[in-house]
Amino acid sequence: MNNPQAFPLSGDWSQIKDKGMTLRDYFAAKAMQGTIEYSPWSETIDMEKIAQLAYKQADAMLKAREA
Image (cartoon, rainbow, N blue to C red):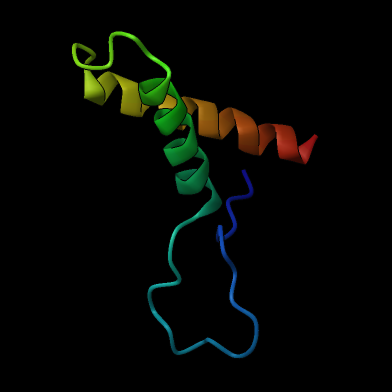
């Protein structure tokens, strides 16, 4: 699965060790944000389960990009 940086830098940044958020992390954050924001039961949900589901959604989004 291709998982590039979400906000790639241009130029020679080879000395930078932390290149920031991956696209998978970005997609998962957006999926999780939407689930929590538009959920009437957001105060009672299992956040760990929602995080796992958000990464499943992110993986599906990355796979769809390759198609």
